[in-house]
Amino acid sequence: MKKNILILSAMLLINISSFAQNNWTKDDRNNIYNDCMGYLGKYSNLSIEQKESVCLCYLDEITKKYNKADYQNKIDIEIKKIRETTLTLCSKNIGIELSDQKKEEVKIEQPKIADNSEVPATKENLVGHWKDENSEFWLTDYGDYKMQYNDGKTAKGTWKVDNNQLDLYKDKLFGKSEKLFKILIFTKDKFVYQSLKNKADTFTAKKIK
Image (tube, rainbow, N blue to C red; front, side, top):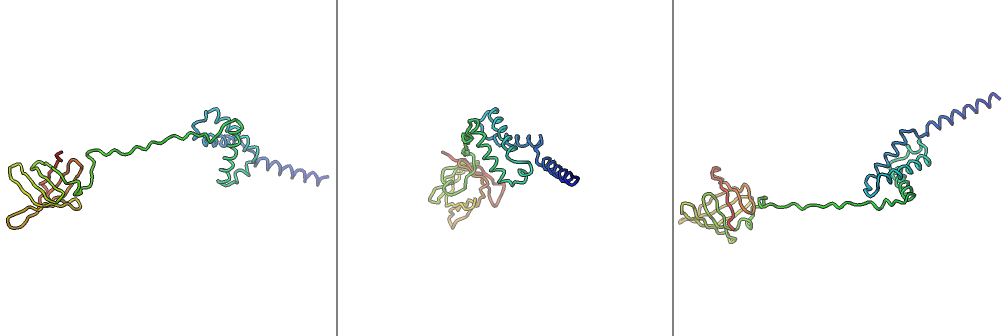
């Protein structure tokens, strides 16, 4: 008799311990409910009342089907599958289709290119009629240039541009001389260039249309 009492006592202790281990607490239930509400936040077509109904059903299904220990021992992918299956079941029970999630259209604005945006200082972009503080000049697509200075003097020759460097080759009676400039800023309407021999000689040329 005494032996039977000891066996029953041991079984009772085991059952009590198991119950305590697997019992969902109030905090546990709150965490499951809040997890569900957070997941449904992306469904903008659902009202608060609908989300609450789905999550109450979700809470009931999870705590009824799984004990705490078994649920906590599951890995992330298992939890994800359980969540998706349970939410689908609960949403159908109250007549909601989660697939009706509204997708907001994202409008991608193309960047606007302003007139003063910098562009490459290529030969194609340099060809044209320009005027700066000191002169007025023309750069042709044939590689020739003509310059009219403010003091009445003129010059002509050939030109080239490479890696933001503008080279002017001036015709002389006995050969040619060259002027080398570094292009500091270049846009489609103006460019700033500086003499490589004398940095004080810096000019801003504007395109004449």
